Length: 516
Image (tube, rainbow, N blue to C red):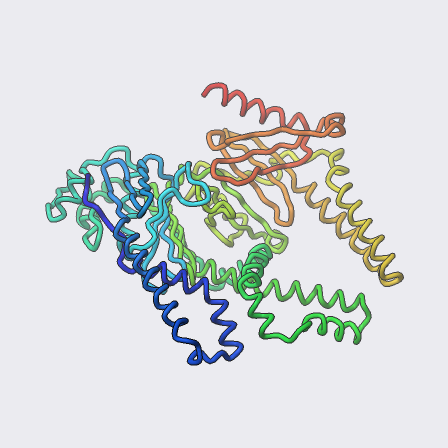
């Protein structure tokens, strides 16, 4: 077994910081109330000190028990005080290696490494929570080299145990970590010249970042942020604001203007604030966005407060999603996301946040050459008889809402009838966006909720495929096609396609499956 490696000693402070974070709302409430901390009885301070000592001691013991080993074909991670936990991850099963710096780690000047495999669930299969930034990047590079190379010309164990031994060009690059040279630079330069690796890269400029933020309309990000702030600061808000503050504001505002105008102003103001907040959160998340492809590795890095770096093999990309929001589609822009195996299944990995649709094929060719974006005209859309299934339920719900507004607001409620043509326009745009295409072993699906999304996937990456229909759809020869890729939490679905367009896709999938 190779040399045992440990986490950065700063990990001892993690438990203490997490405990302080748990008590932070109570500390803030005390500060707002003007609590005189000097008047507290001595046993409060004694209890806080004892708790801090206990947490620090347990954190120290956890740090001492945590160890990992880089072997020839695997990484071994061992941890646990009372219950020992040991994980063995073979390099061939690694899909991506991510270096992240959440806010606490960034303040303390360390980083964490997350190793993603197909078996990962809510958490990454392997996590090294506290390493120096240099060591984390070195380990990331070593793991990716081992994961993407079937055989190495030099043993990893020999390199680790004999770090001072020189290596010739015939032996290949020398791999070292922990404050030592990762590769022999001369050998690296010569090797790159021999193999003629293709290097592609780009960095998002500040103006592009601002344009991407202004056109993203990512209200889901805003909702998640507001929910987190409210759950954290609910008690603090109640202490800062007078009793029934929001009720009083609503009543006073409503008394100065008619009810309908007040509701419209509130809606517009809410949308405007959400849009500005979405711009701010988008900039914080994707600031410093850069992508680089070097040989058979893609590196994606972004983040202002929480910096993240993802390194993965483009061959292990499960699917490509091209999203065109309403604003972006109007000006001919889009974003490219990648579906990769990750423990964070809430979102896809961004490959390019903002580019012209005409440039998508070039970017895919440079970074994910196995995927191709067909023209919009090449996709087979939903037939005319499917339009009814796209609009009927939504229009019925909208009509009931309008009826309720008319009953409640009387004449002013008639303004709600404007929702009917708006709903009809939205659902018709969803109908027009639907499409499917099977070409050169790649399945392309397209649909719309708010953004128009085009989903590109190849047969080996499809985990499940479903073709479903209701009794009415069966009579009209309509089918809803759904596919799911490895690592995806949900299916990608296109409703009410013509049966003649879906059947070749199903036969292609079933026939390929039977050959395995």
